[in-house]
Image (cartoon, rainbow, N blue to C red):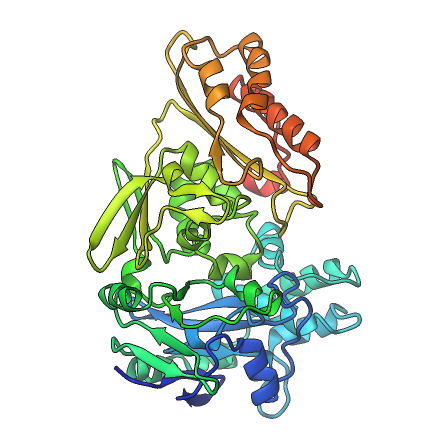
Amino acid sequence: MTDCIRFILNGEDIALTSLDPTETLLDFLRLKRRLTGSKEGCAEGDCGACTVLVGRLVAGRLQYQTVNACIRFVGSLNATHVVTVEHLAAKDGTLHPVQQAMVDCHGSQCGFCTPGFVMSLYGLWLTSENPSRAEIERALQGNLCRCTGYEPIVKAAEQVARIRPSSLFDPLERERANIIARLEEISTREAIAITGPDGRRLVVPGSVEGLAETLATHPKATVVAGATDVGLWVTKQMRVLDPVVFINHLEDLRKITVTPEGITLGAGVSYTSAFEALRREIPAFGRLIERIGGQQVRNMGTIGGNIANGSPIGDSPPALIALSATVTLRAASGTRTMPLEDFFIDYGKQDRQPGEFVQSMFVPRPKASSHVAIYKITKRRDEDISALCGAFHLESDADGTVTHIRIAFGGMAATPKRARAVEAALYGKPFTQATVEAARDAFDLDYKPLTDWRATAEYRQLTAKNLLTRFFLEVSGTPQELQRFAVEEA
C-alpha cells in the first residue's frame, strides 16, 4: 500500500500525500495551481465551462476523454494525464489550430464558456479527422453557450477539420511517447490510502479483490466511479463523505464481453465505452445513450453507477429491466446474481448488503424477430434529465399474438418499475390497435406518479399511455421518431 496519488498535469508531475477526499479537479486547478482557464458555471456537470481532458493508458494505448472538472474528484486521477486549455498554445504564444479556428470564425462572444468549447473541440480533433455535422454537435452536447453562439463554433470545428497541420505541432501528439512512459512509471496495482487534513480518508484499491476487502472493513464507504451523481452530493448538497473509495481505474470492472447469449458489462463501464456494443446489438439502447447527459458525462458516468445509485429517474434501469437484465453483486464473502428489477426495493433502497458492490450486469440478446424501443421524455432533447423514460420489449408469433412483453418505466414510481398490469393486458392477445387501446387503462393500476417541476402526474400518466400507442405504431411500420440527423444517419 502507498499513500501518494500521482498524475501529470499538462507537463508537470504531481504527487499528493494529503488530500481532501472530495476535492474537485476544478478547485485544484483554479485555487491551488492558478490555472483559471477552466471555469465554474454550474458545478454540476451541465454547462461544460470546466471541460478538460483526462488521458489514461487502456491496454497500453493512451486515450484522452473530455470530462467535467467541476464534479471530477482529484482522488480519481492516479496514473492519468490531465490537460487544460493552458496547455494548447505553443510556448511562443502561437494558438493551437482549434483555438485559431475559434478566433477566425468568431466563435467566442462573452468568452466565459469559450475554454470549455475549445477543449471539447480539441477532444473531437484528437479522435476524428473529418467529423460530420452530427459528430460535431454530439461533441458539443455538454457545452452550453448562453449567448446562443453555436453556429460559429460549429463552423470553427469544420474549419479545423479541413486544415490539419503536422501532428508535431500538437502538444499531445508531440509528447505522446514521453507521456506514455511517465504514466507507465507511476501506474501501480498497489492500493492507495490517504488521510486528508481534517482526518477524512480516501482509498484507491489496487484490484477488485482489494475493493471487496476495503468495503468489508468500511461497509458505509461511498464508492465513486464516474461521480456524475456523487459530485453533486458534494457541490450542491455539501455532503461530507468519509471514507471515499475510487474504482474508475479498475480494469476488471471495465470489461465488456459479447457472446451469442448476450452482453456482460462490468460495473465500471462508462456510457461511452458501452455505446458501440449496445448500439450494434440493441440499436434502441445506443440511441438512448446518445441522449444521456453530454459527452463529458457519458465519458465519466457508468451504467453500474446508474444502477447502484438507484435513482427512480435513472435512464438505463428501465431499458435493462425491459430486456430481462440481471445484476451480479460482490462482497468479500462471494457473489450473488438477481434479476435487476428485484434489486430496486423502494425509494433510495436497494437490495445491497453491507460490504456488497455492483460487479456486473448481463443483458440477454434480444431475438432477431423481437421489437425493442426506449423512449426518453425531456423538456429539451439534449443533456436533460428525464421526466419519464419508458422501455418496451415485444415478441410475437407468426399470427401477431403477443408471446413475450416486458414494459418498464422510470420517473413513474419510487423505483424503476415494470408495468405488469399493462403486460398482462397484452400477453396472449393479438398486437392490434384495439388490444393496445384497451391496455392503456391498465397504466392506472401500475403507476401513481408524482407531480414535480419536471412534469405533472397527469402528464406522466398520459405520456406513458401514449408511448404504448407510439410503440404499436412503430411496430406496425409507421415511424414516429423524429430523426435529428436524418440525412447523416439514414
